[in-house]
Length: 338
Image (tube, rainbow, N blue to C red; front, side, top):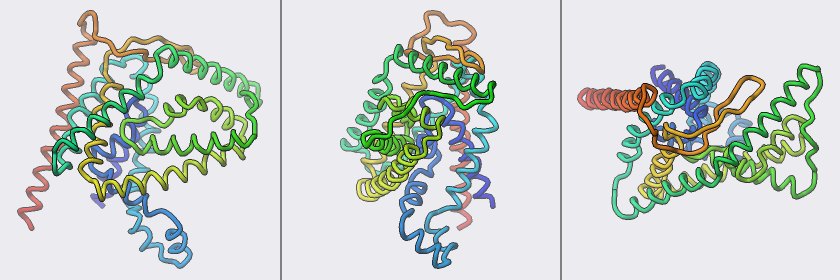
């Protein structure tokens, strides 16, 4: 029971991470030390799952999928995202620097977790880590601040159309989405890419859809309940999940240190995305103004907000240090009892 509760809290951290731009659920799973278990469990999903369920071997399949862990993480993530989303979104819009600072400190201090999982810290691990760092920073900078601003303004237009349609009791018309073979293939690939991105630490699935240029087409398909295209997207998500989890499981089993170093690099690279000090503009949405970050900056002056941010970075580091200390003491106590 204690294990299930602790995994609920892990899931809550994952749910909160998914709300923060630049922090992915995969990042938090890695920092919490359960990434490999989740990948291993999801990797076992497949035809054997269907066979075992049909044969009534539900308990055995539940254990094979490590479903107790995954279920607790999902429940915790969903609950935390629902409970804290409004507060976090408010803080990101009105007190962004201290909020980013807290998560910056949490992630920065937690990098020690994947680092300790690397057994041989040689040149290969260093190169893998550097590739991961460069990959995340490159993806983050692949979209300019101007393009991000234009995308948010377009999202605001879509949200306004939806709000007006809802007020009038109508379905929002976001434009027609063609049903050609190329479109089905594009949505399928979008599903694959989005899921792979969500599994990997430091990369956002929605950001990858924006880079592919299909984010708004997916929104339009969702709004119009275009079931054929949404089915193609869903199929891509399933295929992406099956491929990515199996590939990662193989790499972690056969090239553990290099793979873990690469994943650690993705986490370190995400620090660039959550750097607290940024230039920004506000975009008007039906629910209120939303902050759009444009570029990382060094503050021109250091006032109370900037000093508070340094304090929240320190708080994030202290929280992780405290948890790591408690975990070390519990492991020591368990070892002594054994």
